[in-house]
Length: 321
Image 1 (tube, rainbow, N blue to C red):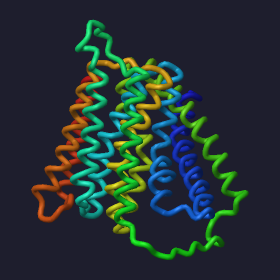
Image 2: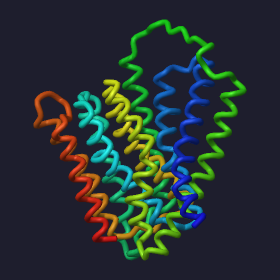
Image 3: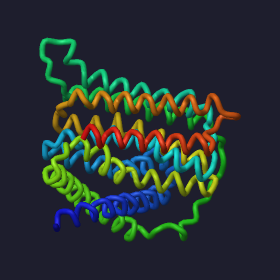
């Protein structure tokens, strides 16, 4: 019974740990006059993906590759269909040209790259599918290229301005350090409890680790993105709502899956190709929704359609799992 309690508590600790780490790190960065753009690209973006990272690293060290891969694929599908769907039901989401023509296609390329690397063994004499350390390194190289691209784009769009930071509104240096340390501790124990609980649930109910990773863990670790995007949509910060989701998907595939594979090669189940196809379908649905609507935006009925498609996917997983 205790392991089930810790499983549920682990999600809370993961999310709170990520929040503390982002708050502490952002405060220190601002004190050293690091620009908001750099903070957003690094600390905040990485922070919302930390739950997925910690779960994946823990799963990789324990040899639970199905959880590691299922968590990433499930999170990306949930990000597009569930999170963007819910956010656009709250408020129609405009899609900028950069996101439509650059970042969404880049996330599609990242998905295809993962699919190619995972299935490359089919083209050789060794038919054992896996994401090797070399594959993980390739994903990390593409992630660095993406960060470089984002930096150049935002730098070119930046207008020089004098920004005065009110340090009285920031956390003290001591409090910032305590937040960072507390966040790291929370992330470590939260990741440990979630993975241990997931393995136990899979064993007790005769479910595959892939199913648990694609559903319960994927939704749980996507809660930071869900809350961030939903609140941003409610406050009419729609660029944050959309950018948070698309950016997170790229981070998940290239950064987190890359690091996980470098830590330990991840055996790849051929059934997971269905989930890759689902990510591609969800991305294509997103592009189509923007293209056919009036104005470059996702409107409420399209958001409702996204959520219905996601529920249909969950039903399919239950039948498969």
